[in-house]
Length: 569
Image 1 (cartoon, one colour):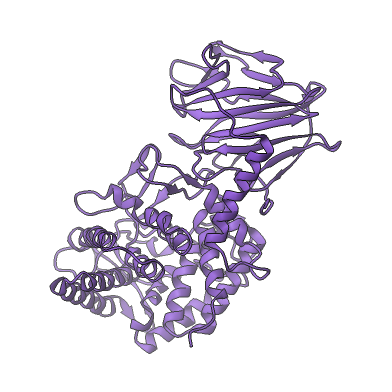
Image 2: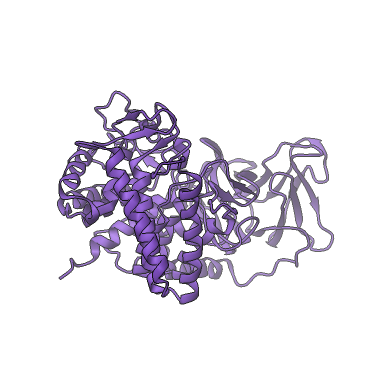
């Protein structure tokens, strides 16, 4: 199986477990003319540049990528191909085309750049990178290197290796730390590419066995997830699905929930790892970090407590062992107590955000006034989380805990309606001034996640307002008629995957099936047309920002899978 074809300007060519990929995207919104080997260890760094050659000069080629093989195709039929042998090793071969494999960094200083030398032990050329803190060994498997520049050079200058166009050649490129055994081929190039394709095929069969003609983007969505998965390294103690192998190469502490749910049915172990990743860095107060990645854990903000909502859905999909349930309960209880103990002002029943970033909706119009706010979405998420803790405590034979969590949930729910409901809408309340404020942000309608726990009148009013946000492409985070709407305004207009999934689920549980169906259908059609971007223009449907975002792919898989299921009897 070759799998779907895709454009590398939108989705990097990579492999499950690998920390590097091939892409022209070398930094945030920076697109190079040529493909680069881009590593995500210690950040996003372009390491090597691939320049196809014909007659000694750069050759114009078309680039075709599938999950198992990337090809630079010349008009005359000659080509260069790349395939992963493993997460740390890339095979590259050429027939009728040469290659200039150039060091991306132009200057070597005592603190930056890359040093190129020939290793007398393995015989390969090795590049050491200050930026990634790793080494990159190029081993010739067939043919020969016919030219070099900058070997053992310091300071400014060109550093490259040349592979010839007049005869076939093959090389291996490895990313590693320090000492490493000489490269060993596990098979021919074609055998390696076939094996990579088979591994991806097994993954897509596991996570999307329901796919068919009605879900044409399912395989590509699965590839976005598969290729953005990295092996444990740095601050990641378990396999992780990065949000992207472009510049959004982190795991934020709510994004991971959607990836866990999409993986749950077919890859339960990987799904469990995704759910727990941020909890590996839970602080003594119970707070989760804002984000984690290879060499960074940030605690300057948090993210919303959607984890109770996510755990409920995860438990519907995966049978957790008692040990897993005990761990989830302890982690979730500490996270919940953080909101109760550290984010409720004295005498207040409702928790608050300190900044829009805490909500995950960084610049939503909800936060245009005072920013330390009690908001309806936060209260609703916390109610769901408290109820899930109550259910898990009951499953663990802790009846006293279960009753206490449910009592606290009732207190927060009562305060939500007492303090933030102003017929016919929810408002936010500034913690310091007590001033209440309404906005037109979709965030203010998020209490629909309470589903069947909402009074029927409130549910109907929320659904009507949600419908006002529905464009032909999906749910705008700020309605286009709003004076604050911005087409590329991040959370001030564009369509996002997580808000779509949360609201679709809440509407469905509240009985608004027709509206939930329309939202689902439009989001699926949007991804099938515009791919798996970080977010989308609500009026044109164009993909915006990072174009290979895993929670968007996960949202597609979740909604498409549910759409394939027969309705309950």
